[in-house]
Structure formats: structure tokens, C-alpha cells
Length: 348
Ligand code: DAH
Image (tube, rainbow, N blue to C red; front, side, top):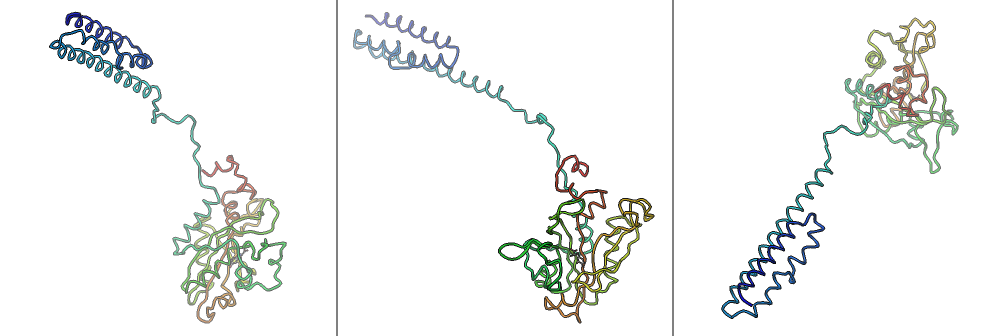
């Protein structure tokens, strides 16, 4: 064995290894090639066995060239391996690319505020502009807050379980937002100026104008020397903002246990302009009732420890569904709760 033969064999083995690296077409081929080219048993390393046939002073040189050849092959393999991995990654990035600037696959339906929410927002906006704070109270009430403190007589028919939802553990679902008046006055001193929107409950079968769950907005103002004139001015301003500035308003005497005197407020019909002939909004009366109101009853003030000789106030309450139905000309309250998008879309 001569150094020359070794050089020839080494050269051959290196060329063969480089050629097979060159030819490997995909990463599977590279994986198959790896042990053969890189491993301990690679043809180039095998040539180490021939060192024994060389003279002692030839061996170091021979070992060095074998190692160098192996290193060149490994470098070629590693370079090709890296290039192939990068190409594969690039291809994945290309094929799996998501173009976030493309429009969605379907038009996303755009929601809108529910007509009740829009109506409530408008009511709140108008009173907020007049300086009212917004207060809330619980939907599960006690008889004290829902009736007693509001001056309901012990035998008042509204207390009947045919009208109110009583709960097994005591208490009831509030039948109106008026109990918020009591709760607020217990925790705040006059001057008081609040509205209290919220959900209310009554034992009613569903028909065109009734629902067991509905919404109200309560109002309460308590201060010194509050009179019917203040009530009149406030609610007239509200009605004009809500229904139209050129419409007349009127108060009719009415009864609610927690106010004295009590009244209902009508707005001249915006549909027929008050003429009333054959109008479905005002049922041909020329007037539309929109709320109940009055001066806070002395017994109500006393129930929260206020002195009716020193302070007075007015209160009012309105149904959000009713106002929304009047405002949009909706004939059945059911429409609000069925969530038929063909209905809801009209208010978008
Ligand atoms: N709570 C009454 C109802 O549910 C509405 C009402 C009337 C509220 C007169 C008031 C008021 O504050 O003064 O029918």
C-alpha cells in the first residue's frame, strides 16, 4: 500500500460522496445518505484502516488528508441540508400564507342597538342633559320597598299574587321601578335628582301591549319648595325633546298611592297632529298618554325619615316599551323580544 494509492482511493471516495450529496433530491434522500456519508463507517473514514500499511512517517500526513476530505464532505452535506430545509420552509410559508388583507369569506353582519336600548338611551340622554343622575335598584324586591314604603294600602290589588311574582323564599320581582325612589332617598340627602331605568315584572299574559317582563324609567326630584310647576316644566321639556318641540302636552288627574296629587301626561298625537280622525297611534283621540307622575306623597317622604314640611318633590314613571312603540309606530310589544332580525334591522 502506497501513499499514492491512498490518495487515489481517497479522491475517489470523496468524489463519490460529494456526488451523492449533490444528487440527493429531497430531505428523505438526505436522511438516507446521512449515516453513509457522515457516520463512522463512511467510505472515507474506512480508509483510516489503510494507515497501518504505510510507513510511520507517511501516516500523519495520510491521516490529515483523510480527515480533511471527510470534513469537506461533511461541510457539503451540512450546506445542502441547510439549503434544503430553508427551501422547504419557504415553500410552506408560501403555500400556507394567509393574506390578512383579503376581505372575509362572508360579509360579517353588523349589529345595531335594540330599539328598546335606543329609546332608553334617548330618555337617559334627555334627563342627563337636565342634570339627572342615574340610579339603579334590585329586580328582586321586598314588599316593603315595592309597596309599603310607597304608601300602598295593605289590601291594594297590585299586591295580589295574581298581579305580582312572589318568590318562594319571600320577596317578589319588582312590579315597577318606584322602589328605587325609596332606596335612593334612604342613602342620599336632598337635593335629589335621579332617573332609575330598569326591568320590571308583572303577571300578565303576552298580548299586543303586555309582557310579563318590561322596562320602566322612574324619575325623582326632591328639594325645598318643589311644586307642580317644576314637574310640569320638566316633563314638558322631556316630551318636546322626545316627541317633537311643536306638540302640546296636558296633564290629567290620576291616582297612584305614592303621589298626591297624581297625574298622567298626554302628548298631542305626532301622527295625526292632534286631529284624531281615524288615527291608529292615538286611537282617534288626538292625545297619547306617555307617563304617570305627581308630587311625592308625604307618607313616602316620612317613610324615609324626611320631613314633608321641609322638603317636597315630584316623581314620574314611564314604560320604555310603550314609548318605543309610540315612537316607531310598532303595533305589538312581542316584536321587541322575538329578536327577528327582519324587525331589528329596521332600527339599525
Ligand atoms: N309606578 C307606576 C306604574 O308602574 C308609574 C308611576 C306613576 C311612577 C306615577 C311614578 C309616578 O313615579 O309618580 O304604573
